[in-house]
Amino acid sequence: MGRLLVQKFGGTSVGSVERINAVASRVARFVERGDRVVVVVSAMSGETNRLEGLGFDIAKRPSPREMDMLLSSGEQASIALVAMALMEQGCPARSWLGSQIRIETDTNHTKARIENIDVAGVQADLDSGTTPVIAGFQGVTAAGEVTTFGRGGSDTTAVAVAAALEADECQIYTDVDGVYSADPRIVDNARLLATVTFEEMLELASLGSKVLHSRSVELTGKYGVPLRVLSSLTDPAEENPGTLITTEEQAMEQPLVAGVAYARDEAKVTVLGVPDVPGVASKILGPVGAAGIEVDMIVQNAGADGSADLTFTVRRADYERALEILREASGTVGARSVAGDDRIAKVSAVGMGMRSHAGVATRMFDALAAENINIEMISTSEIKISVVVAERYLELAVRAIHDAFELESPPSAD
Ligand code: ADP
Ligand code: ASP
Ligand code: MG
Image 1 (cartoon, protein in one colour):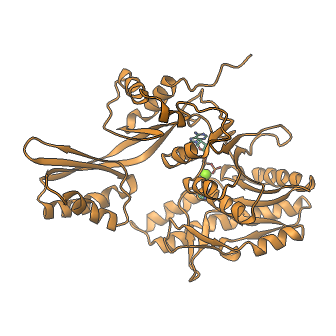
Image 2: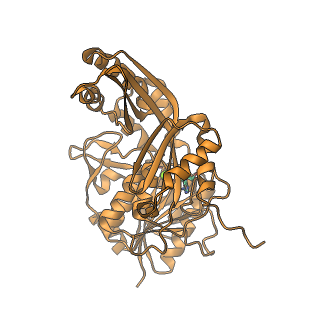
Image 3: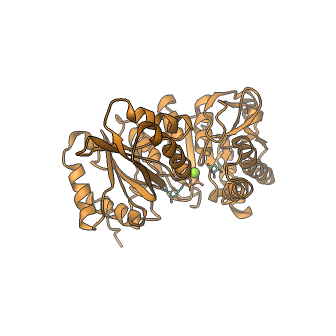
């Protein structure tokens, strides 16, 4: 009996007619060997960016409902093309929108969360020997409104469908060979990880490694879906096991640092001269949260004169709005002024081994100091250390930290 696999193909993997045909022949090969495959696809590469750009050309703050309607169309095109390509290979196939399967979500447009999936139709396809091709990144509310899951959200569709079908494995095919110790586009000698624990992957993804959508990793942990990241660009005949996301018990080793992640699109805002009395932080942060702006790192410095400066980071897209809100809030609490910087970035080191080893932070800070990179903010947890630096130092910082923890791939034999 073959396996039940969910195979997800990202934008680059379906970026052209050739790539779509290559995806179809890869899937067909698994089906011919007796596996049942559910395909999940993203929009063709560049398409979601193009659509988003059009939205922002028309409106400074486009309606989230309309944005979902617009962005979800990218996947509608690619599922049809992939289904056609499969049929051309003699493999019966049928495309499905999120709303047709019924991937039901909450009503949070542009960042909806999946609440329920009905896999009956997809299961019926599988039972009749048809390969379902599902649109990633999109769902539907109970009231029938189209929603999307946030950029990169097709991974989450794949894991959610795999969980609902109790698939043997969810395979995320992308344009690199798996999960590396750092983005291989920034760090030339980054090492391909054969395994990474689910906890580490969750941190890496939420701290910016876009190889997996962080919500997809959350679902992997919650439902115990075996998850693998691998390349769609290699010859399918070649053995390419990629990276397996494992539980801690299965992990072969506990590296001090498994990987380095970065997030470029960050901004920081500071409210200066805040009266240092109870309740002020909540009066300042309350309206920011109420506007749906996510606040990440928060630092408060007490000044000598009984006042304090409150600094926190937000996504760059929320920067202008956060400043507006803070200018108002600072008046009500009697703060002196508001300042900000939208050219910052966050760099993080993640590893299970940090739990049992001291001195990790020092090693990271020394590496940054040696490159003359100023650390603007710091935040730590049991298995990660993050720093905020000026955006212009981002790549240098990632490489310096990668070197400091000796994460490079071993030199090849030739
Ligand atoms: P897809 O379109 O297949 O979903 P993405 O562009 O979303 O692909 O994710 C793959 C990209 O993630 C890679 O091309 C790589 O530049 C980037 N990336 C960032 N961090 C890592 C990492 N640690 N390991 C592998 N890839 C990474
Ligand atoms: N097409 C969507 C995006 O570009 C979803 C995805 O690729 O996962 O963000
Ligand atoms: Mg992606």
